[in-house]
Amino acid sequence: MKRLITAGVALGLVVTLGACSNMITTPSEESRSAVAEWKGKSRVELANQMGQPKEAVPMTDTGGEMLYYSYEGHHYVFETDPQGNITSAVQTR
Image (tube, rainbow, N blue to C red):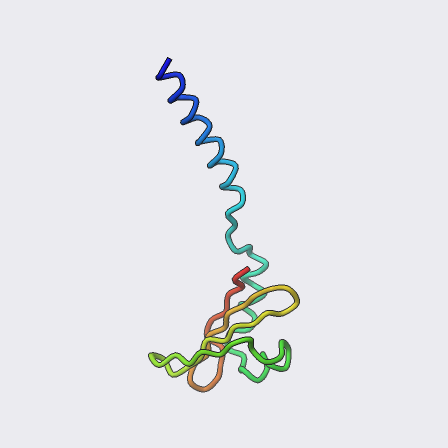
């Protein structure tokens, strides 16, 4: 009887974890391509499109900045080089 209860609990845990795995999302191809279009563009072009960043954090290791944006209900992080050109971009949620 003890084995049956243990097996039932284990099965319930597996089913629960399986259901939760559908909630974990990875960036879609569309969101990757949407932010990838910003690579190589300047910080000024970004500001013209999305306004001023919510937060700008200097990066002492590269001399660039991390720019945090909320735009049209989406959240983005951009990394710039010392000249203000965007080197990477991701949509965070």
